Length: 328
Length: 258
Ligand SMILES: Nc1ncnc2c1ncn2[C@@H]1O[C@H](COP(=O)(O)OP(=O)(O)OP(=O)(O)O)[C@@H](O)[C@H]1O
Ligand SMILES: [Mg+2]
Figure 1 (tube, rainbow over the protein chains, first blue to last red):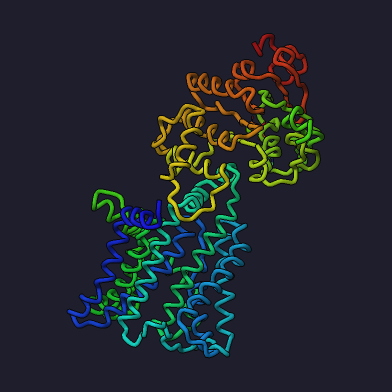
Figure 2 (figure 1 turned 180 degrees about the vertical axis):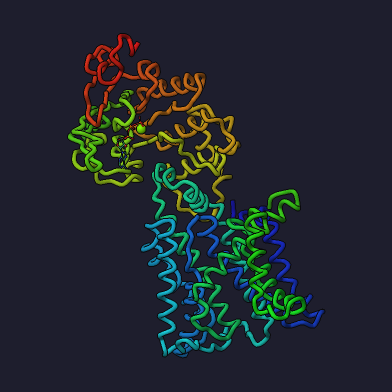
């Protein structure tokens, strides 16, 4: 089986994800017709957050590892761009390579130290590492400390990013690559073993495999995907601050995954769409209905999330599948 | 391979001890399983049978003593290392991959057996090479007909068979079976007895079983464990006639073992 037939096969099994990616490809046409350039901006944010959530989903959904610190990898990915530029290093491709390497290495170290624990201890250790990195960057005055650092849109030779639409498609291409990569990995021997470990680690050991090796590898891949999202995020936001790795950002990624459908291919992306649209619209809606509470749109969002968790097992993907009468 | 490795026992335990606080779960146990023999380990509830199996398997460390597989000390090895050295295990409580289908369970076991599980590209479950090996794994216990069934839909007995198939998947030299018929119906038990019987000669089996009928039909040798210690070891006939065994385990009334 060649690479192309593997990819074709993967896409055929993940029509929903293919559909969403196609939707993002065509979306700028719509926002162009409607003359709403801000929509593209929102779509880019959705894609970036969706990409990070997809990375986390590999360990959280498929591997069953509840990592509560993945925003740290997004942050490190973004800071790699900022810091590279700080030292006069401008090539965007190199930034991405540095982000991937740094997050891979960091994922290896954190994974190695934390994956020996499980359950609540694992959650706490990953959170602790993320908090350490957060406060490290708060204290690094050289790189802006609390205030963060501004970033120039990087130089992605030969693509000149002066046109925001080019950045849009750069992000889109990154999302497509990540999607295809995960699609293939999840069905490979490695991916199947990772999923088996989630359900029954001792049986996998009894087969003569070392679960830790698979978990660490999955953790590294996941960290690198989040790093890529972070690197692109830096170019999109043209700014990075420690806020990007605040623990609540890690929580947001988990919420997105649960909302969209944990352990599914399309779930994180659908979750990101739903999450950011709600975040965008709920305050406006509240303004109309109850202006005094507009700040507290989370009051509505919380129950929505609880509703999804309680009544839509499998998140929005599960809901869509039930409506469509078939599994995606 | 040494001469002993070819002709000696597949498993030999010597001076094995394990205590949980004041409780001696394993007391100076010595035991041998000859290559290809079925060696039954019996004893009342809480005698320390599972604890002993866990020490052989590597999920529990003994306080002292030696564990040799084909003459080589394995006490320092991890569980996966011991599995790769030739130990297969079925668990007292069913332990299969419950979220997967029967064939997927076997495909993963086959990928593990061939040592090629670290691959990221080709889909595993539709890989013809793996599927072929997986069908072989399933047919050893006769459940290849249930290949596409999700494990959650299997009858209890079929689950036990799948578990046995997975334990055999790595072609072990020593098979640790912890109550393989537990909870199975009479027909399933007979089926399982037939399958274990046919393994005789291919693989050394340490069989923990409470069903005395099964034990006396299958075992070449029987070892009796009471409160962590071996109180008798011998052929089924010797054990059935052993006064200490009858007193301590089989009950003092006559013909309990018949
Ligand atoms: N991890 C542990 N900590 C403390 N005590 C333990 C532990 N594991 C087992 N024991 C004790 O060791 C003794 C032997 O237990 P084990 O499970 O080996 O018995 P068994 O012979 O397999 O019994 P059964 O026939 O009921 O399966 C029991 O008294 C049990 O309570
Ligand atoms: Mg037991």
